[in-house]
Image (tube, rainbow over all chains, first blue to last red):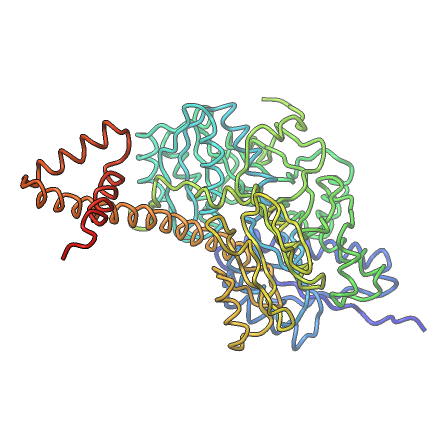
Length: 384
Length: 209
């Protein structure tokens, strides 16, 4: 008789705390994919049941719940984590017990673990494209800002390296803010930015404080037409927090925007609406959280198990028709081939896509020296 | 601005990191799970990797770094390429750390040790730091050789001057001028003239008390 027991999986995102807006959307992406799989008959007739905890935007809580998921709830696979600090907290635990983590977030690269599948963008899948676009359209003097932790440090290093490849380029400032920084903190910097007059601002501010940054910018009277903010982390979710009028005209590079005009994306958004109403704001991290569950379920069907040594061969090299396009898990580095895009925030709180990769870009998480120019040939120019 | 931090404005990526993609690496490790893990991680980092087991008696040209498995059953590690000024940076990969093995690690002049089983994490840092140390050591050795030669020369010139002052009853300054004039007219260094004077003086003094 076939096994009809449910398959339990761990789901670990932050539903509260500084990064809860993205955390909740990643949770909803995960639950949507689970619903779809279960409604289509589950995995060989077995229902997927999420065991979920709220990691409260705290690395220590991530670590504690990860261990609980593996030891008490006895799951083999965890879907979760947002900031690098949360991934670094869970990594030693999945390695120690030889379990699997699916990580649906862009990050700074320079990591490989046999126990992790990375489905967000590596820097060669967003930073290079953004630098190319911003320097070509606005100029090569940049002011770098970020939240005070490792992802912004590394992203800003890469951005400086890229921008400084242009003639007459300049880095006019580099500042880091706490995750709970307020508008008041950013206001002082805006005065400095007005003095130094960069061609654009590059921001890797993350979490709920992102809205404060854009509001401080709007109040300062600076103009996105001549000095926009370019970001890798400001998504539709952050825009919904700050209001479309505040975000209008600023740029973001990501593999996924809600506005992608494909049948797969539209169907997915429809189902999301039916399941969660308007409470969920789809964004790049939501999409990665969504498609990675399908990658897992498809691999499970082949492996008939989710014990890491049995399921991994079926995950590596596997492909899926995701909302952003057909993605593939790279067998050599466990990261994912994705479609870089550049969007400008519009008056609907969405992104108008102005550049788009026509082919997936392979992940290269250990790339130290990025160079401009090797990506644009595969991009289609949409408008601007 | 109290809640914000400004990092060094001149922060640029160090060349040792930028070089990783052009680095030529030889891996001398048995073809097992560990060896493959090591090679795969080096390839992810982007190094140009050549792998052999057992270790080759001669290295191909231009190898920057050698990963060398030190095994209890392969303690004969007297490779010629480990010696000399152009020896590559060496990272020992060890499965034991008893005194016998550690002694071999010291003997081959390894600049870093990688424990087995190999993990992906830590390899990049070990690689970069080892090259840094290796580069520094090489520079220091070169400077040391130069300084030794210089120091010997200074001693010889001092001795040659004192010979001239004694035998010709001239001042220190005049003795040095004499050496320098000779060097210029014969187009050799003052150190060589000094060595010749000392030599000649020894020969001429033969038999004297």
